Length: 221
Length: 117
Image 1 (tube, rainbow over the protein chains, first blue to last red):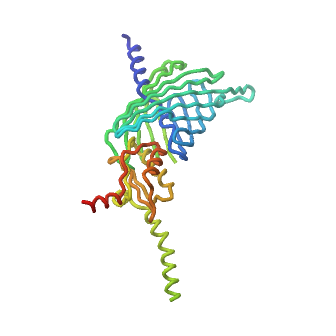
Image 2 (cartoon, rainbow over the protein chains, first blue to last red; image 1 turned 60 degrees about the vertical axis):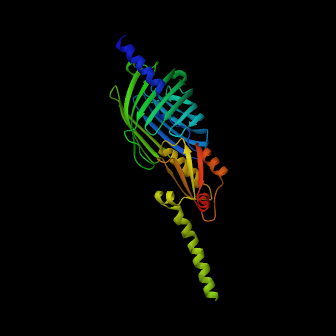
Image 3 (tube, rainbow over the protein chains, first blue to last red; image 1 turned 135 degrees about the vertical axis):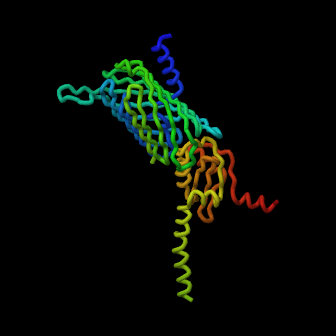
């Protein structure tokens, strides 16, 4: 089997096992606000949401797609489809939908051409205090800015198990598959990252296989 | 007599909020040691879980302080003076926060058990 084939299979395996950051835990506890910021080679994204009840959250989603050079502005609804609470672990299955408008990053006054956009996604995660596994898939229909899918996967391990209020540290690897990406090197890739988690704040710092940085931040209010 | 009564009433009026406020600011170790109720939980894996439970319970008027310990997988609850929550309400609040209960132990029950022994 060729190297490209092995890389493809490896990437797909990761995609089936892990999840993209911005979609992780998109439903909090009732009346809580959450801010999720994601920056990587593919996009800059902000999702600020309010949890309505145990199963639903609703919020603003802003996204700049580097590959197709457009900005999405819209509303995103998240639903916790199923949660499994066990003595030493928790697993979740989430669904989400976003609707909004897309436009050029630098719209010219002569040819500004907005369009409507729709995103449908699903994600799942399983974690203990030591191990973390997640997977996510999204499909975007961005009108004149194309239609595409993306798949993310994550594996993580905590080098030590921390108690409440202490600094929690995770070593993670994220794989992605973006079949319709215009850049060949972005169709399949991996990112190594460190997650630092203390109280209501979570910070992730990493670098992908192209040397591009990753910087994510989540805060629960 | 009047002056004495006035002093007593004033002292009580001023000390009540102070006592209540003191319970609001208990250290985690104190909350665990003095908890009126301990709740065993399923699904506790991170600090976000702790925050969800603490914030959900602290919204309840009967609750003075809470602490979630990830190691013991327990929620410790200190109630305001003369207040408490029944098991059904505690289970409902835990579920609202997104978790499930394995057991609920009240300090009062432990005292009764000790007396029986």
